[in-house]
Length: 308
Image (spheres, rainbow, N blue to C red):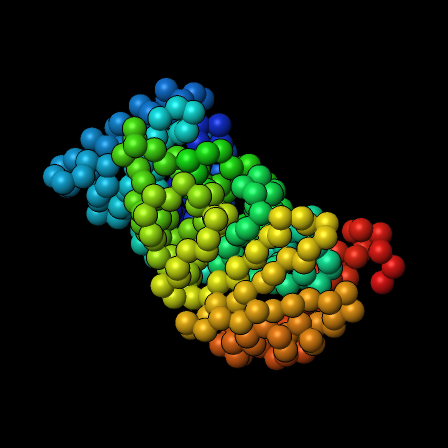
């Protein structure tokens, strides 16, 4: 009934309903005081919504116009995953970013670099070492995602839940007929800003459209990107003795990038083709970018009790 409501998202029976509102465009979503009392109540509501979609859509009863204003998509998932529903007016909304950081096993320069990559929505691939070590880094990178971002996890094996309010979890399995490609298509339609995957379970080759979406994923070998930029982090078998390797990929070109304990933000910017291109495209001065990297590195050192 409110023309200012641009999107309504039902993502879990134990979470409130989220909306996007015309008067609060700086926020990717707004938490309401409406929530379902039980899974049964949520499923009954989605069934009523499905009945509204059916007259408009003969091919897919779970996706289609609800009325003249809203278009709905319902994703049916089996327990313990909740069914998900998106209702949208299909309008583009701006997003904002805030930062959160948690250091794992990297130098302040490396953390500042990875933090900036996530902030600029650069896809990050974690390869090498064991699956458990890759998942540990994946969990650490998740904490750097802006708190107000729209996140989707695509999982066949459980992924640690991000510490963010807006997180949609998609479960991939043969039983529910949802594979990785379909899940990625859903994520693109819903304009998810960040997609987290344990891609070791992907059965066939998939190209990632990384121009507007940041993929953070773990895999034995990196996936191909159709567009955008990607940083491949290769973890060694012995993290205590060997160095972590970084490979930037942008526009079909690849370049290794290294970090030293005494590197300055200026040196980091000069080595990163992705940061240089991002600065040019967004018309940011190098001084502003250097200031941002410096603040990140100093914050990491402050958190760790390191003298600045």
